Amino acid sequence: MSKQNEKLKAELLEELSEDISEQIEEEVDEEVREHTRLNKFKSSFIAVAAAIMALGQFSEAVTLIEDGIDSLRSRFTNTVEYDLLSSLHVSNTEAYVINLVGDPQVSRKINQDVVANYYYDKKFLLTVFIEDSRVSAYTYVPLISDFTPTIAEYSDGSWDLLVNSYSEFPANPKQYLIDHSKTISYYLENLDSGNAGLFVNNYLGNIAVTAEPTSQLLVELYDAEVNGSDEDVLSAQTRLRKQEKPNLYGRGNLPIELIQKSILTGAEFSSFFGQ
Image (cartoon, rainbow, N blue to C red; front, side, top):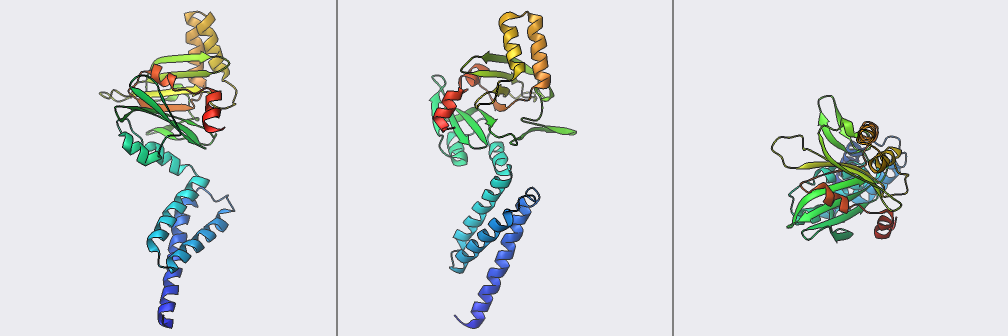
């Protein structure tokens, strides 16, 4: 290779490295300025990509760049996971779901026609309900405190999971289920879609899949259901809906009873996912 070609190649690699650096910075700098380790990680990543390009493997380098950017975004933000969950819709095919999130770690039948597939991520637990090879419903539960996906947006704000209360959700509740025992505690409700003509439910809930203590508001509502009057129940539910922030969201056309059957006990969650 002539000196002129070597110089040209070096200039191209330098330019490509600068482009890669700028692309990474545009993707993550706004949200990760406080992470001082990013610069070291980014420099190493650019060096590896440039080395691959120097060997002539441009397609591999492009793949590395794309995967690296997603890895950085996932490491320092929740954008990748938010985008993934927002790409899931009722009536998607099972093949689409597998292409989107892969094969489930756990799968079990909810009834004769519906299978619940569980996808564990360190940030969330996703449950996809499959009926006739299509998505009939899905739910997800954050597993870390700062995983707060935006569920609904409107002119003066948004409704975010783990941030806003039941009563702030822009849809009307239709039914709820509750239980509180040594093995499982949950409050679930389904709400209308908020759009006329769409026969799709929203699901909100509080479930205990980790070692976090059960909500006292949930316990009070359960006690009112067991021992109280109708007025006690209404008062306790009103307090819960105004004050409690759901940690489960979902959509689908399944009855709430089938959503309830998919809830894992703490022991099941630990056994299935080693947590």
